[in-house]
Amino acid sequence: KSSTEAQDAIEKMVGTLGDKYTRYLPPAKYQSLVNSATGTLAGVGIELNIGKDGRVIASDVEGDSPASNGGIRPRDIFVEVDGQRFEKGATPDEVANRLRGPEGSKVGVVMERDGKSLDFILTRAKIKVTSVKTYLSDKAGVGKVGVIRIKSFSGTTASTVSDAIAELKKKGAKAFVIDLRNNPGGLLPGGVETAGLFLDANKPVVFVVNKNGIVDAQETLAPGIDLDDPVVLYVNGNTASASEVMTAALKENGRVTVAGEQTFGKGIVQTIRELSNNYGGVAVTIARYETPKHNDINKQGIPVDISVPECENDDAVSCLPANAFKAPQEF
Image (cartoon, rainbow, N blue to C red; front, side, top):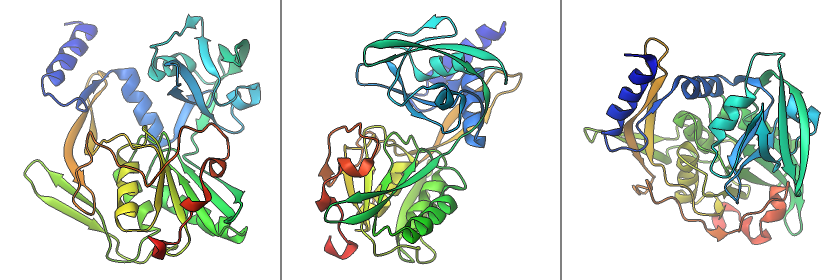
């Protein structure tokens, strides 16, 4: 069989399993996931998502990247990349595949901003993905608020967030916002360990249940570094998987206020297996998880304590009401 026929056969076979998350990953998609996990990409430094009108947008732009240095801004809409036009219905993966290429090569990009078309010529470079971003804000009636945006979870997320909390406290932060909007998950241990930063010892975080019904109960081993300051978890409909593990752990232990929109509802654990002969890989569901109160949020999501409509302000704190910032004992 040809390479294309073999890939089609694999996709068909995996599709018969009846699990939409167990899926075939073509070579380009598989490599994209590997690159994301290792944190290094050759591209222009744009995070992609689907906008309100169904078109692909720049949801974030890495600092000091070809995109940011060239003038592309968050919420710009993709019209064309490297000669290929993208209409409503195009996927972020399709746009990403056109943006990436050999380091040092050039790519033409046409973006739409405020109804106007803008042309950019960018030089691709190695991109170090920053999965955690922080800044200090201010809220009337609350004081200085440290904001920690987590774009996805990796093995180093918890230590990065721990350092960020200490640094923001030095700058006067008396409360925190953990921004998990559009966080698709990543590595489960990253979500578990980050949740532990805000919990006391011996608190349940997640129960992982395998196909044989065997339960792996994961709980905190030591007190976290912040048990008392008001914390708001800011979520939306694209908050999924490991970020939902963190959300449920902190919500059901009475540690945080959850604000925003109901989360996505992906309560499963997956692993990715590489296929031989450069045929890509397969994402396979190997377990499901339950929250500390044994709720199964798969296909349901986590309801919020305070509903906040979609907000495009660059400062997350400005989107949240002051009454969201409650100390743990006030729950």
